[in-house]
Length: 389
Ligand code: PHB
Image (cartoon, rainbow, N blue to C red; front, top):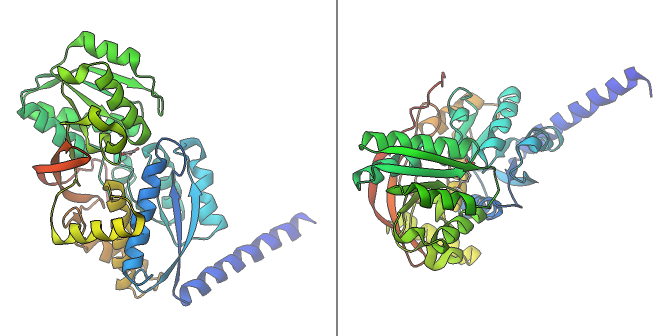
């Protein structure tokens, strides 16, 4: 085939894809790309997000804003180096209308760049990277979860108020851990404490022994740890096995104990964490959500399920406002920006940078529950430095 023919074929193919997408939209179909981790340390988080998303759609009679979703899935493996190729599979190969993803902050930063360049609608159902609603913020990028700074800030405030003056931190060395610790430091400082040691290890490494020995030698008043999924299970168990939980309280953002308590068992009992969701909220909305989720999946929902459910809600509000006419992008975005989301966590709104403005709860581990003890910080908004929109 000549070069000229090749170019012609490519143009024809692109046009055909475009027509196919327009045709799908005209028939009220919505192509949803799910880019989530389905393997690795965050696999359970990805599955819970998808479950939550699908549950909301099922509750709307299988529709989202009147449109029928058709799903295209990619396992992102929480691997930043594969992120650009993975999101392009959804955008260029599958021609999706919207991408929902992901969990890992390093992966989401690469996704946001592609979404911005291609003007693809992106709803982030977990990853808290501040950059995507900071310097990279854009009209087509929304988050239904949190910013890494939010739960960290609340935990710092609580730890300081509880008398922690000198604290050690430990996390995986990547954006989520760094930013979570940054939020913790801001909250702790405001409450009169300081961080005396920062410990890190590469994601998703779980060889904690040497670092636990260092914590024991440092003898801080408390430890703040950011881990999640399989890594959180192992860290909390190793911390208790080293006997550290008897003398040095272990604090963290709620990811440290969310969706993990069955596996952590006795090691997690009594731990205090901060998060925008928890067990025992006992509101009509949350009770209905929990009953419906448990009936459908034979599992108790966690924060990740809530974030997936709310990603669908946010999108549904935008789609309903334009009656499924995806060409009316600015109206769709305006409706999402104005939305009050009736979340199981409690109603929340979005900041100018498209991050949830939400209450952060203080929770205590009792049995297999992260029991809500109260609100640690009310209506907390990430200041979103660098966002100009
Ligand atoms: C993140 O990478 O932003 C992240 C991952 C897992 C969590 C929370 C944040 O539970």
